[in-house]
Length: 114
Image (tube, rainbow, N blue to C red):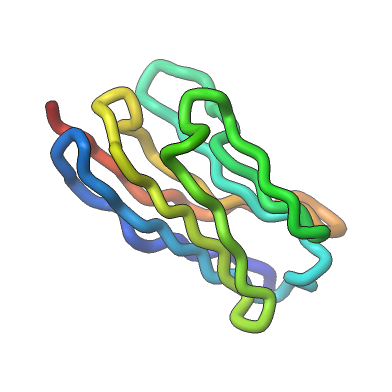
């Protein structure tokens, strides 16, 4: 059964860093587009970063230069390094994949205090 499992969320002060990891199983990882989305209370879910199967990386403007998405096809993992975190980055972060179909993880909470 295909699934995505996130880890690495937590509480951090503004200016701090966190690294999120997502382990995928049951999908052809090297062919999948992988990504991270986030959803804050009362707000719409938004794309944070995407890693294409061809190796490209794309970011929402608000995290450009602070967040980095990387993938390890051998380990079927995708990571999100988040630096210089700000209170507005507080949200539940969800791992996402699209290969033959779309798949979502359960999410991990990131809270940034001011």
